[in-house]
Length: 293
Image (cartoon, rainbow, N blue to C red; front, side, top):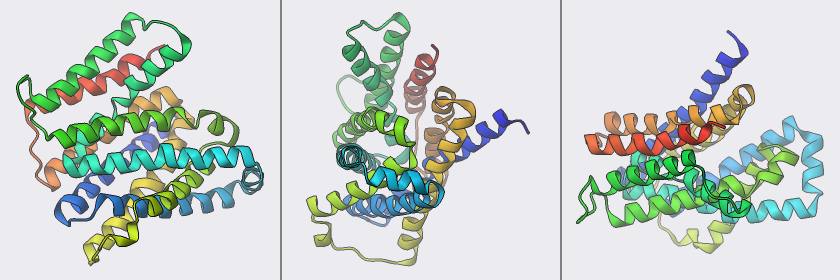
């Protein structure tokens, strides 16, 4: 097996873990009645601790240097709160208001938001290919939200709002840590960011006041989301992208909404109509349109 093929397979595995995690989140929120605030806090703190430990074991020298660089460490705290905390909460709430497939696809609108922000920062107009990508994505969102009917929404208004907020949050998550990741890699900033975001979320939302009951299915679902849907997904996707490059990694990452949609339909019996699928295709096509240099 060539290095490139191995990279493709590893990246697919990481994206698939994210997709299955979305369906697991839908099950916990919609079927088991788990509060999205409570679930977000658990996911951030425990996944953050695991990634911090992984960073300590694999990059011990860099770990000590990073924790003793106050400027970068404080920026990581801000990233955890403004980027990771916002992203995870908006995405989880979007799933609870719609379904894992729709929420995951709507989050991919972040690609367009990043493009627009980049054009504004560079003070340049988007080229034809970029305009085409923006049009494709907006048309896809329109079809998913209304099924082509201008007078009514097919998904709930809350679901649409949280889906678009999830895209904004994901765009912040993409843009905010770029300098940190170039200097320190990904595991340490993401791990510490998740931990700080989870701790801040715990106090901001007063999570201790939220009543929560446990059974075997909820515990298993939480463990799966933290270990497989967050830690394994992140590590596998990062590892695969080092073999095939970030642009191809981003395109292969489109496996995530595909898996989320398929598992939501087969396991939770979520109904997706042809108009949904067409909208999904148009939104995800944006990734491929903008991936070409």
